[in-house]
Length: 443
Image (cartoon, rainbow, N blue to C red; front, side, top):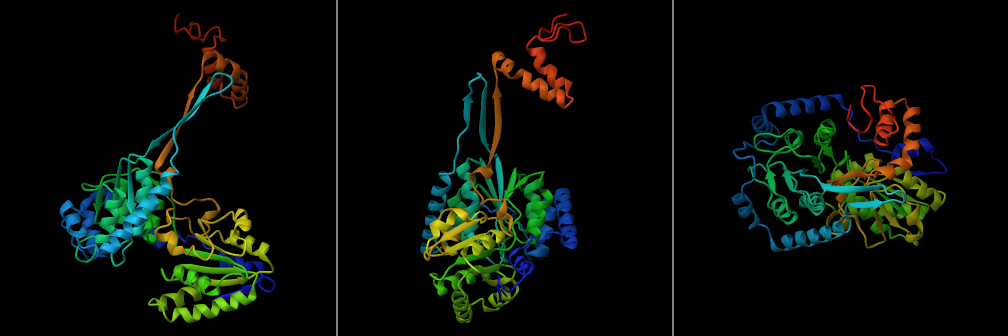
């Protein structure tokens, strides 16, 4: 793992280490995804079955999960796992209920009424990775905010296992989250199905949820036809720590992200050289004890790093430059430094707030901006599933009070119909050019 110090390394070296791009400009991958999108749009379910056979090695008889399949699978879930999912679902639901807003209307001092009307999306599609892995937590984190927002129908697509079924934990999570329909389709073809609709899968208004690069490129390409939550890259953590931090906790939190896959990233930024050295030693000891040792070693070598700064001010500056998905704040006075953190998807404060807490049961959605996009993006939240419509209703008197400003701006922009739309209503034009008195409709 690379170790840099700001008094020796160049600014360019540090930026190269901390700044990550989404890397969605691979022409070959985009060409393949475009082909998949085209085939699904053209041939619907037939294309889905062919791609599932090719990529997942499963011959699908039934694309949608039946009620019988759900019932059979739910009986296979161990009680402790079921209880854990229910606890997580309840905490996630409670958190997102606090985000709900209502429509509002306001009559100003001129007598003009303005407002904002909130309308839930009608149908949302959730994508959940699957196949060899299982991510019931992603079901909860994506579907519960949608249901809290009032979305009428939530559908879910996930790759089938090799026996053609969906993992029981995913099905239980879907039930707890209120998912209405489930489909055994994964990859870019699932995104295409939700965007265009097929004989089995209805088209949605928005697609949310994490996936591999093919899924992400597919979301990028269908954006505009449907909404998407974000273009997410590999997971990442940046730990901002001082001499008070527990080196063992710092090390395991870096490994928590690094164990996902070889594309994830883990950084430590600290003004304490002794802590940096202690964390390196703890990582070396811990890696050998973890089952994903090979992944961890490769990830840390490729995408890991420790930066020793001159002081805490510089450390905070570099953390904001990194704009990480997860920022762990392990410092003596975290609440003093918190207002200075401007760019992070989630901030985990103190020794007893590990990333696994945020990933599973804390409450906020773990669908977070990655690859530096936390500079401008937010975690998945209730507002992602609501449309906001502006409402305007002025009386004649209220319009008259602002008419001079409208006319001046319309004239400045050369839009005469804009100007006349006001003047005719107020009877300020004698004739409209067709022998009729403006505002009466009478010759």
